[in-house]
Length: 293
Ligand SMILES: C[S@@+](CC[C@H](N)C(=O)[O-])C[C@H]1O[C@@H](n2cnc3c(N)ncnc32)[C@H](O)[C@@H]1O
Image (cartoon, rainbow, N blue to C red; front, side, top):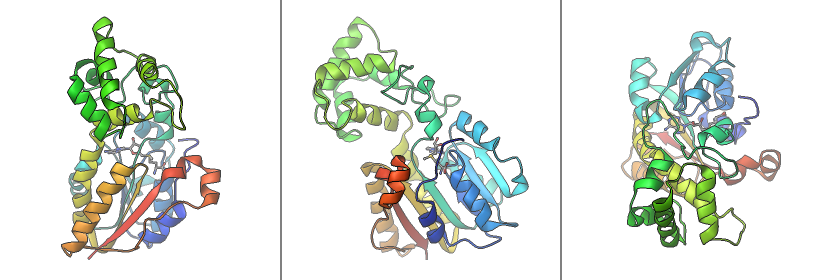
């Protein structure tokens, strides 16, 4: 995908410690930046199993790998089925698993997907519109004020959750929400003063996480990643927001306490200032790495 710069690439490669001939799983193909580097690191005969939930991103990215041949096993699907895919494609045990969470740049900026509060689009936000039926509009038009309050509070960390939920319920009795702008206008009426963040940031984050059950998928994939790793194999996870990072941190602590894994680095790894200057998307990235015992 043009324009997608892989985040923390040097650190990912340093911690995966791949050798020629290793098999590895990239659970989040996205624009293929990391996958390309994993193919290089495992050449000439190591394989990369790359998974991508979003069918459009998948198609566009795969088209940019014309010469990867049988070394790239590409699967369009959700990484919450990682172990099933690894078994099906005889790609286990593997030397490493990478998860670089979040959205692909192209999907984020495609107004037709409804992820961005900065452009007019349908209130959709599904990663895979071919298999998911619940859109962001389904949630804002049908959940109760209590459910919406809980959603904005827990998944958005939104202090004005209750007032926003009530404004949404009032507004939809006049006309159901259909577009991103409908929602942004309602949020702006409740939170008119722009702070550092756009007033709709947290509401959009909460809806996206709920529509795609992103935390549920992450909770499901972490133990599976450990299962498919060979002994000593590395799991590298890059998160972009605190709920995901906390989930990874707590799970890693439990896996370590249970003797299934060991922490490779004491502290979370952050991008350098130079990387953030060159790629502002890296700003909030946090990398954690654990090794299977
Ligand atoms: C930040 S991008 C990955 C970028 C990639 N590492 C690169 O270098 O281009 C995250 C990707 O993971 C995909 N994704 C998010 N959740 C997923 C899930 N549960 N299963 C599979 N893919 C998922 C998104 O659609 C997006 O394309």
